[in-house]
Length: 171
Image (cartoon, rainbow, N blue to C red; front, side, top):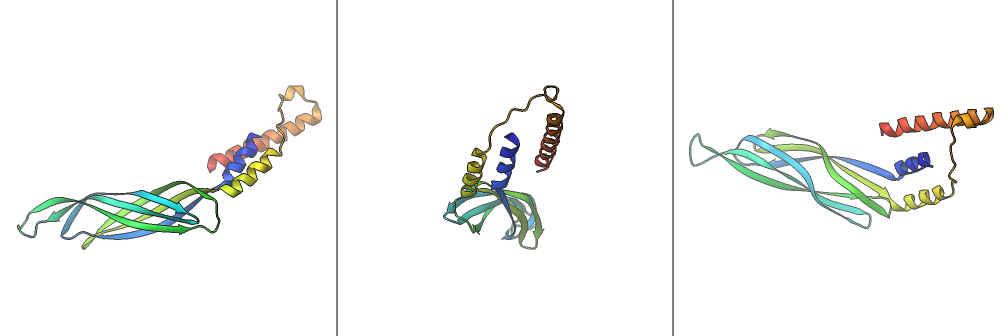
């Protein structure tokens, strides 16, 4: 029963990864102190997921009024995103930013990142749970209590369980 539950769980949890880029204009930029990104908000309405990625940080800016003078400035920029699913009854589990990178360009910074959306299909989840309810729980007894034919079956099931465990650990 545990094996089947794990397989079923893996079936209806899905991920979408969206490669994204953004350029942020920062006037009179000299150097970047830090830049970070996070998903600041998101909302699922019917089959459409809309949200915002907040890119923020600090940079050194040259003072146009004073020669050889600089000061630190904080900045933030919002990058909107939208994903349309081809199914209904989607539940969003998590939306996050991965692999955030940036480079300084002439008048600002250029960012690249991945928006990772983890979701599940509630309809598919219900179907799988109904199918799981049809399985009967079986008791696995130690091999020393089994006859010879049953011992072979037990060993095959144990090997299958170990293989499934290895596969799920890789995921």
